[in-house]
Length: 413
Image 1 (cartoon, helix red, strand yellow):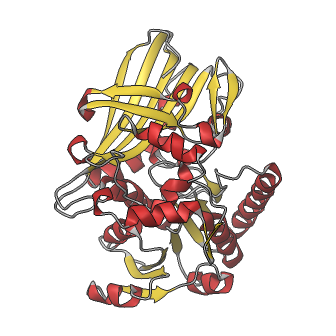
Image 2 (image 1 turned 60 degrees about the vertical axis):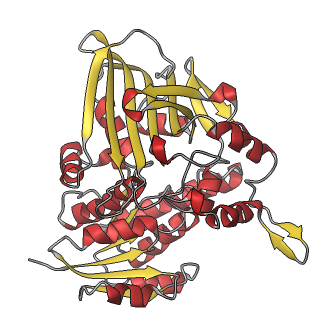
């Protein structure tokens, strides 16, 4: 049996879960974990696994990235989102397979010229990877990731799709939502800040509706999802460009109602709506005394200094992934819901967010290595074999449910 060489870029919260899973794979002979933290070398030695080695990396340095990627059978990228396209560019140059949990196209980019340039670059990367016989599996985490796999499966069951509402959310269990914002952090705090100031597109009455970045939390853009298993209603707000995904799924011009949403406990949106409109979510530095500080960096530092915004040893988070499709199935008005609800594993300490992002990254890499993902170029999660992927998730305790019912004709979530 061949022993594969894996390079993992990033050892944050999700990277820790990814490495836990990779170490369980018998056919992986070497795992190189690269991170900016000086402690990474000793941290990997402390694991006591001869297959695992740590190296300090400055990911802003393309040559350093290329050198680390050389000779890898697959690279797993778990760096902050702004590195995603850069890493893909270097992977194409080196000619190595890559799994990324992030959007390669920055969803927060509001400059149309820059966004078009990114699209062109991604098309070039795709062509290079195809010519080299290599694969980039992008958006292969929880959201984006599992949500797209569930969505593709549900959509394929319908003759006509009239509404498609997709949810990807991580938040505290009700008993752990015990701070002023009813939320605790399970991934990059500044990443959360940036995800809260993104323009979105939803589809209503068959027309695209633009949601400005500072309006995603506005009352007219939110709705309530009341799931008994959650212990109370959740408020949901738009996240991302539904028009883009309508194109990917072949729904553009035909679907009448569509949206992608994040969920939080009630009250969260009202707080962040004020913060967004007051400029606290801006990345533009402001002069503060003798230094310049970005409001996002200030907010992230403030939250990171307060223990009430992090989980205690016995507190759990929840990951909710849901695809809700309505239309005509086998000649009848039907609603089908595919759903995953995962909780923090208190035995391992891994949060639901770590499990539903880090584990998929490892699974995607292993499916490329053993040939279950054989297509070349830049791939979407929607192209991965559903049954094989669900089997892998189930083996890790992440299980899906499917619910089918008569559709009452309501389009909105």
